[in-house]
Image 1: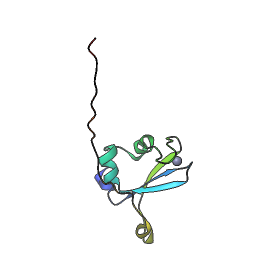
Image 2: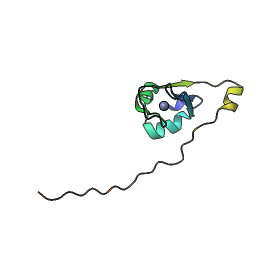
Image 3: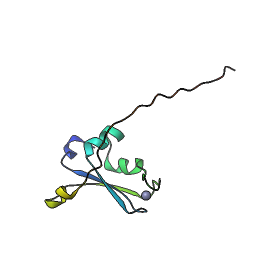
Length: 90
Ligand SMILES: [Zn+2]
């Protein structure tokens, strides 16, 4: 997700659930890193069915009314949770 993709929209969909979600490329980059849309596709998992294999992802330039109609899934927060791991001495 490069900065020049900023005017574009990332569409991530699950073919199994027939769900489409729209993301801002810069927000996907925050989460997944500076990777290509192909890598995004390989990394995402459907939030509904949990599958990876039926996902698709592409970047596109919305035109006219399309942009107005898109409801983005916005990044709210990236939470780094504290995990405590114990080990018994051997
Ligand atoms: Zn699904």
